[in-house]
Length: 442
Image (cartoon, rainbow, N blue to C red; front, side, top):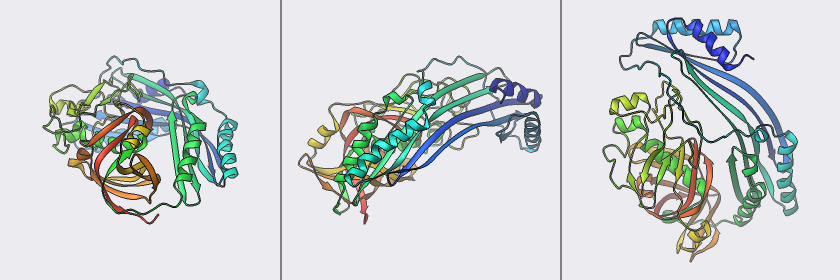
């Protein structure tokens, strides 16, 4: 396989007089999957995918391919130019971005993590399976790791590349009707506490046996970091993206500078050196900047790409998605400011409420107010008088997130890194008046 820079030069030559942008994503990964306390799958893959965007005379076209030999490049770019010729002109189409200095970020590539062996992943699965067999529990989950490299280049002189390693340990444990879950992603295998994750999932499963059914209604809710992230990610994506803001479809539209959320809530997007770091440039090759979205409940800013920034008469914050994008720019590296105390302290301060480990089947209902629905799973508990009283059957929620994040009672000092619409660093939270619209039979 030719190196990416060489392929880009060949593509630019084939593009002739058209403006040409190349997005190349190289990825090598491996995964070990286990179920019923037995390893069921071990796979490895390696791929390089190219996406080429061509612009000329107000027209644009895009082609995708995954081979870089001469005939494939010639055929793909020739097809793209023919598509380009047939497109209608778009008066709002921007030319490609010119190069700008890219800021330094955290080193997210760890060779050891990228090259973990199948035997390493198998050993981690075996540790959990052995403990579960001994206790009569059943484990399933995955250990996956690898490396990804993204390159954005164009024939105006822009060239930006980012490389990172990754690992995720995700486990679910079943225990005679009970279910528990734990997961941690990282760029560094040495940051993964496999033993703690396994013990957490096993303890939740054991505690979840014989769940009770409770009536739907409004409850104080204690959200573990993953559950917080599932809700906060929707609040950020549908509230603080420049396109939705410009179109008046965001709750933040016309309300920057106003206090709409809890004074305990501060959210920033910071790919450079924040709690959830990532790529220091966006998908147009423009530098990402640190953006405070919410400060002590006050709406401070939204994120922009070049297109939405031009419409809003401001500067791009470096948050473009691959173009064209129907969503417009969105924040992808969120950190919520931690508070004080531990998850145990949040529980201790609750007279009556529901502790949520995880949400799933989450969906947006009303964009303007970020009304969502979804369900709890893998560890849902009733809290009474500052203690976990019992496991309860899973509940469906229907809740306005602007209202929910206005009702924060407490935020923990402990945080967790979660993969959800990008990366989020989230604490646990206690919210009042959270609406559980129905209960389930499991």
